[in-house]
Image 1 (cartoon, one colour):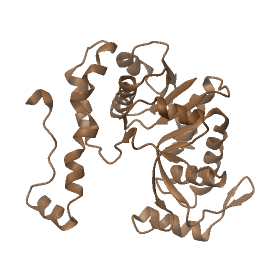
Image 2 (cartoon, one colour):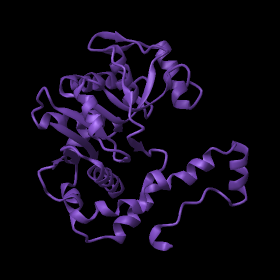
Image 3 (spheres, helix red, strand yellow):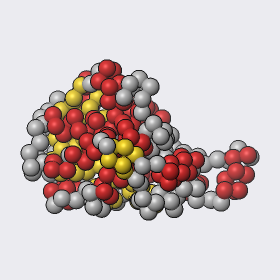
Image 4 (tube, one colour):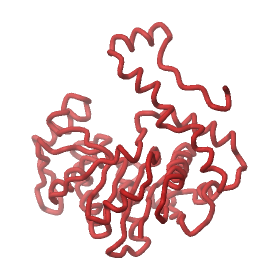
Length: 302
């Protein structure tokens, strides 16, 4: 069986993103796949996606989310591997099962069928590589802190001292795909998160830990950017989605897929990408004179 996993809790903007991601998968898909949604509001997803056999909403309350986080003040992104493991194990995974997790802020560009075929062949899929641990140490303060901590510390995981190699390739985990036999990777990731977070509390600990666990197992992931857009650097799309859902409020579940083209993130992100390709001094000058990048007009406004 093929399973597509996502999660959304908290504000409506995250649930709207997740619904949109699942609608894009439905639009492109040529093979059966059951969507497993870990959410605090199952009724939200039923409103837009229906209540068919291809959708299972796994309700979680605040107490469960806090426990996965490690307490109300714990690490937010610790929830992700916990939620994926919970969703996968809720179906009683069998040897032939494949699990493809996508963050809520994703959009399928192509048919997910070839991705499931690769998972069935034993590949592990992630979003994209972001560079070596040492090589990108100057990109952000978080990267600098990570590199410094990795040099100085061995992380205690169940009594084993785990070090992060300086040439460790760090992967963005907006997409995580694996077959049933590799589900223990998630448990190992949680254990490493718990060892790392007290030492280096940066937002990307979850994907660093996952990258390290896969490397220690000798697994080389493959990127999925050709098939799935992860628009984590385009938060402005949340406003587009809010307008889209308000505009078509009340439509039956089966009507939404045909309207996805109205606010395609792969199209709407282009002005921002073009602006960001300009030299830094030119971007700053344009902002100073009131000429930052401008979003595309909405189809219904033309």
